[in-house]
Length: 263
Ligand code: NAP
Image 1 (tube, rainbow, N blue to C red):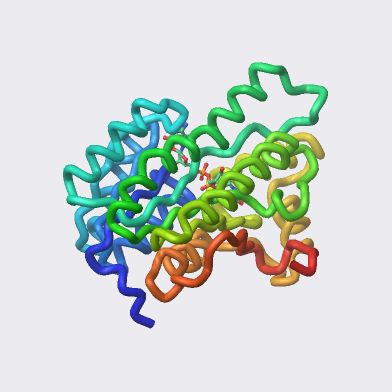
Image 2: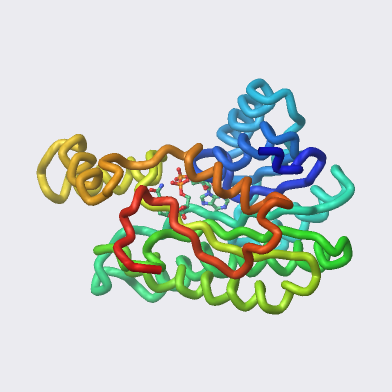
């Protein structure tokens, strides 16, 4: 299927690893101009190099922390300067810590709101006026299946991602008449460093091998396995395409059937 992404300019936030990186590579494979960011310059350079080698496309990479509004503002301006426009933006950040409610301090709540919610606000504020001017845009937020079905020991994710979902659903209403669609993509268990970290933590707490925890997670999924980042990226690139022009205001899981709700 021709997605019509050739020459489109796509920002993918927090994209030196995992889901963000997989999305950036898939956009590059589809012929888009890609801009990525993350905090570690070394990992970012490694990701940009390997995407360039795999796809032959240019990748603009800038080291930044998505919790810093000025840094996000300057990054989006730099992308526009480099490629002339911004068509697509995928918001993303690292996952908030996995803890029980009683173990989370007020400072940790504030930090998680900055990381998960405010970072999406910062990108949306910068990219939407530019997309509106062009009468075309795709704003996509990486959230989690926790917005459909809360996950044990992830109260920060369960609570704050609901805020991101409310934000994005509202923006879909406000900007739907401007040729812009706004959607959330909800990953289920997908093999990235984040999942590896959570599996390691659970294995330590339960006193069992990591493989045992992975087996238990896989058993919760009708597909019988955890996902691959490229399976997630396939939906993201489709939603960013012209083909998806009438899909707006949705939260779509990519979870092998893990979410048990009807809708
Ligand atoms: P990951 O493998 O840990 O990768 C996270 C990426 O985000 C890295 O490139 C990291 O680079 C970057 N990052 C983290 N904090 C950042 C910050 N403050 N500013 C800029 N970049 C930042 O994670 P992932 O599995 O791809 O997950 C992505 C998101 O999806 C997370 O929010 C996660 O909770 C959520 N999610 C994942 C799964 C899953 O199974 N993988 C399931 C549900 C939800 P630096 O550290 O260098 O900044």
